[in-house]
Image (cartoon, rainbow, N blue to C red; front, side):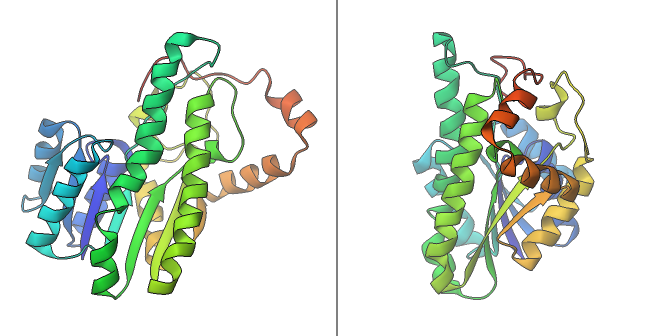
Length: 254
């Protein structure tokens, strides 16, 4: 099995790399921090391909994808996991640059990750998966998280469109919307996080969903029930319940 993972140097991406390496997979590991990637590769026994790059750099991703496929062939699974979160307020002009960065990484970076692999995966046939890591924050907008909520809502809609496009060539597109997972991204949250899930357990559940080829899932499942209920709330009630909800600290890209 060959698996290509972005955002692999920490959090969910690192946990997925550890999981798939334990299954004997050959990995392509992408992150901005070269030293973290190399350290992860060594911990996983070496032999995996490391690509230190920013997922907003489409030419660099194209080159990395080409190198990976020349060495190992078309991947079985491509996981667009790279993502950042930050508290943002539209009224604060200095937050606009952060807003753009969040959207570029969380949405454009996902498309740029998949793009160079799709032709080869179409030609290779077999059980292929394109996996996008979204968030329950994309189901309803959260106060103080305009950029993050917008980016994850866009990711969910993008992945749905891509799923329809890939259906004729039998490439499964899997959308995973995590709730609260124990990662550096959630470590800065100054509020209680219901159903908080250890990252290694989350990775195993993600991998099971990927193997099944589910079109969309929320993990952990209790958060999925909460998300569905929130989606059904009328705006006036949702606004009243969440107007004073705790905010993520502004300006922290994690």
